[in-house]
Every structure is written in C-alpha cells, then in structure tokens.
Image (cartoon, rainbow, N blue to C red; front, side, top):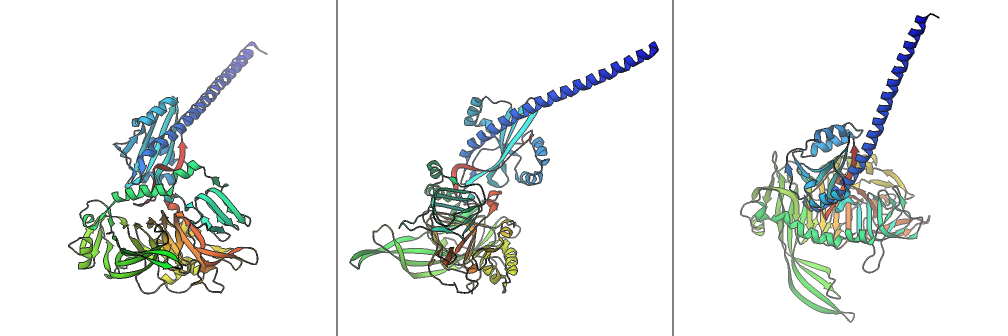
Length: 612
C-alpha cells in the first residue's frame, strides 16, 4: 500500500473517531441534563405538592356560608398564561378550558400574605415558589388554587378547584340511624344509594342493598342476608373526630345564624339594590293550655296561633294567569298540640282563622331583576307594602320560622310541580304533597315514560315514569338513572327544615328533585305503613319507587316504608316506598345556590392536577 493511502485512511479514522466522540459527548451531556432535569422536576413536584396541601389548609378559614370571604388583589398573575397553555395541552384540556372561562383572572389572592401560610412554608424550608387563589366569576363558593414551584430549569404547576364544604356533597347523610324509641330502620335489597353515602351512626342492614358511591359509617349491623353490595372501594369507618367535624346540630346552629345575612322582610327587599331573599312573617303565639285524663294518665294540651304557608312552583306558560315561577299563599290557624311530658309535643288538629294568596314572583325579561306581584289589600298589609307590583333583586331564598307546604294548586292530584330556576326554601317543617321536578328534565322523563309504554298527557307520563324499573322477581329490569345524571340543567332546589321534611300525600313513583335537609328531625313519609295507592297487581313493585334526585341530610333517619320476607328469602316492600336515591353530580362540578348549608371553615377539594 502506498504511503499516501495510509495517511488518508488514518485521517478518515481520526475524523470518524472524533465525530463519534463528539456525538457520545453530546449524548452523554444530554443524558446528564435529562437526568438532572428529571431530578429537578421531582424535587419541584414534591415541593409543589406540599405547598398545595399547605395552601388548602390555610384557605379553609376563608370558606363558609357565603363562600370565600377574602380581600382579593386586583390585577393578573404574571405566569398565568404559561400555566394555562400547559394545562390546555393535556388530555383533559377541554374540560379545564371550561373552568378557565369561569375564572375572574383579574383578581387573585397571594398566599404569601397569609401569616400562617408563610410561617409554615418557612419551617418546611421551601423557596422559589408562588401560591395564588383565583376566584370564579359571580360565584363566591369556588376558587382555583395554583402553586408554581421551580427548581433549576424545571417548573411544575400543582392546582386544585376548591369549594365551600357543602353538606349536600353527600347523597345521603344521617346523624342517627336508630329512632328515639329504639326502632331500627333498615337498608334492604331493593334500596339503591347512587352517590356518596355517610352515616355518623351504625347502619342496619337486612339483605343486599346497593351502594354505588363512596360509603362512610361508624359501623354496620348486618342482621340478615349477604350484606351490602359496594361498587366502590370498601367503606370507611368513621372516627369520633370525623363524627364531631360533621355534627349536623352544629351545622344547623351555624346555618340559622348565617341565613339571616341574605334574607330581609319584603318591605326591605323592595328597596335592596343587590340580590336578597324574602323572609316571610313568622307568627307562633301561645294562646292557652289545659290538662286531660286519659286512661288514668295526665295528658297536656296547648293551643298556638300560627301562620302556615303554601308554596307552589310553576313553569311560566306565557298567560297572565299562569305566568309565574313561584306562588306563596298563607293560612292563619289555631293549632292544638298534646304531650305526655310537656317536652315532646305532637300535633293534633288545627282550626283555620283566615287564608289567602300573598304574592307570586315572575321573571323579568332581559333583566337581572324579578317581578313581585301582590294579591290585594290584605297581602299588602300582611307584608307591610303599599303597592301591588315591584321589581326586585332576588337571590332565590324564601325563609320563614313557620311551616311550609309545597303543593300544586291546580286541579288534579297527579300534576307535578316544575322548578324553573334556583331556589332555597327554609322553614320550621316542610311538607311535600306533590312531585317536584326540575323543569329542564321534562323531556328526559317523558322519554323514560315512552320507553315504559306509559300513556297519557305530559304531566301524567312524567308522574308515572319509573327510574329503576323492577321485574316480578324484585331485581332491576331497566335502569334509566344515567339519563338524569348526564343531563344538563341550571334548575336547582334546596329544601331546608329546622325540624322535619315530610311527604304527606303518597303518589305512585314519587319523585323529588332537590337537596333535602332535616336539621333536628327526619325525612319521612306520613302513613308509610299504610297501603294507600298500592294495588295487588303486576305494577305493584314499580309503583313503590321513591326517587330523590339530589341529596338527603337528616338528624334521625325517618321511615319511608315497611317490608316483609318473600318466599325466595328477599326483603320486599310491603307499604310505602323503596329508596332510589340518585346523587346530583352537578353539586361537585361547580354548581352552587344561595342558602346551601355548609360546614364553617372547611373546603371541598373537587379536582387536583399537576402539569410541567
């Protein structure tokens, strides 16, 4: 080989080795940088997670009945656009784009200005981070908490949606499962709780009830059958600390104080420049008392002068006589009560002194106001007003310390009431006489009725529709609950009773669309152990469905029906209703209504994510 060829070959080899060396160097350097960036990102993630938890803990004290009561700073967060771009690139970016559209990004709260937060962050030794809360537009109950942590070149965002700690985050909540007289009320095979379940007491079970959501209880007493069927992880057993935190009596005390902040007498409502609720006059006066002997036992009686209100929800039809959202009437009565110990008083009868219509509320087109229409001289005098019509700012709350009946005033006993809008009704006791349906669900219920071959007009079909239809063997044959859970609506109702919420008129396939609260009493069915509408035919099982679409919270569990053991060994409804409780998941998706009971100085964490 010639000397020139060896030289050329040597040069080529050196070039190749050099290129390979440089490539290896850059590859190794890139690997080292990637390893270093990964380590930085892990450290930033760890830091962001701890700061987020600290932020959640420190923001709790600002949450309550009126949402976040906080001094917001005006302006925008400098890095928010970068954060937003990164979030929208994620697989669930579309869902978060909707969240961003709800935010008021011209306001924020820097948690570094919170002494408790700064002190704890300093103890942890964390630096190079920012933590801010951003409110939702026109919704004080929700906020977005975002933490930005940086270590070297790595930037990590950890973020969560927080809300007031609404009591209706549970589909079912009960303080006590056993009645004061010692009677137990059972969950049985045909019962379905479709949503988060919580009892601060020992629950009693016979058969195989179905729990489709999370389950929390103090303990369980399984008296017969295979026991509950759980579609989620095993139940959580509550500690005494857990139970004290969600004591419904304490929640009631807090609520009764706070509700007064958002309601006023009608004479002040008509002067308010911001949305406010209507407080109806409360009359509850002692008249006389006496004693009687019954079977050698002294029975005590007392007479009270009271006001009883009737409320009717309605979907405006456009005609002058029926164009209202809600109507309020009243009765002035003498009520007789009796007692064996002068502590627990039971209602006996009432004598009507006078009655009449008070007012109705209409929507005002192209306005954020409502139209209040009074019904004559007596209504004006009763409410302390001097005109028949007013334009008012109304937050949807109607409150009284007396009893309220919810009843359809129109002829016919099957017509449901349709709720169009967002309302909270607060009263001593609340009595339900008719179906209560969100107006936006009309078509869904008609669709279910058509599937079930139910005939009649729209109201009849909606009233008779069965959400979870049972076969002759008592098992679910058709389940239409997903149609309700997946439907979009802006209608909502809270029924808040300081004592009891009672179904007084049993309708076949009773439906109540609402969040129900019985603070010191129970939710129950009057005459739950009487047959009433129940027939001995093939529709017997389906006619006994009680659907609550929303949530239920009560102090002592009330009875809605009785059962017997069938020949095949299943507990089967005998009188009253089987329970079909379906959670309204809109509650945990940013939906809020004024007057919803909350736990003070606590918050719900609805979503937690991170992005880098």
